[in-house]
Amino acid sequence: MADKPPKMSPQVTGIHRFILNAFGAEPSSAPRNNHTRMVDRAELPALEPLALRQIFRHRLDAIRRAYRGTPQNACLVCAIDPSRGVAASVRLMTPEGAEPAFLTIGRHERCQLRLTDPALSLRHATLVVRRLPEGDLCVRLLDLRSGLGMVGEDGRTLESVSVEGHLFVGIGRYVIMILLGGEDLAFSDDGGEVYDALPARVFFDQRERVQQGPITRAPRALLPANQDVIFASGTRTAARARGIAGHQSRVDIHRAAEPLRQPSNLLDGDRRGTLTVACSAGSASVPLYDAQVRDGVLLGRYERCESADLPFDLPDTVSRVHALVLAEGDKLYVMDTASTFGVRTANGDEVPGIKLDAETHFTLGTDTDVHWLPSGS
Image (cartoon, rainbow, N blue to C red; front, top):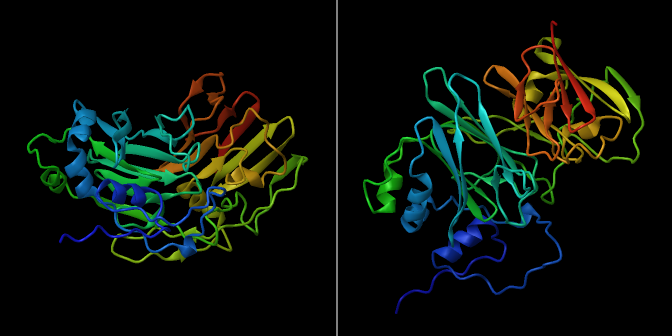
């Protein structure tokens, strides 16, 4: 008599529940609490690695159809629902030179890769792809301080991952595949062989996420504990509870994750510049340091954004998660994260992103002015 498929723990959720359902496991009949979406990660067992080879075997035709025609200077960003196939896909063209291309993944209608899983945040993650000096593509995916996060190939919950080559992560019930153009996916009808033939991935960075109690997180502080606002005026309409969350270190793929706390002292030599934010409620100028912009500084109205540290409330024309200030390579950018009213240049043109290589003025939405002044200017 054949063995029955293994019972699944009622605590296994998200992508792993859907993978196990799709490939023969039975869901537990244990009752589920439908009145809360708060999950205590401390109660969950260790997550399993993504079943990538199985997904390629069962969904090869759908992956091929989505990938067909992807040129060498582009990548396919594809969301696979293991139980149903391709849920959504989009091609991201990579410009010549070192300038990055980027897109936002989430439930919001402005996201370039829009997904419907209600467990996802409206703006869940940002993908950044740039060309290295030798011509290869570096792919970086950053969680936008979402509640759910994202799962790496090995089952760890990640805040950020950078890789040379293809990238696979789990977000909600989907496996997100970033497949670089120019590959031959049609040499075999065996999806396992196709997966095995993909070039090895070279990980530059996998920053693991440390859960502290329920699956929520305070934003990383825009201001370190020992750093005052340079200048501020205005009032806050409501009290905000916030704190400095534990930072994660960048780790080599061959080492265990090591927690990295907010440094007690940020040297002036590490100061990247000064960001001034002004709207009808007030204005504030704050310094930004290398350690902050390497991890990304989120601007928006949500508490999960670093701009929650500002001493006034941003107007409603600023989205809850509006833009990301991020160091990519040796350059600094502000990137629109699928905001409703956009990021605009000083001339009023709506743009996906702006390079901050000199003194720069830009606008969040329609009436929040931002001034970037690099150190030494």
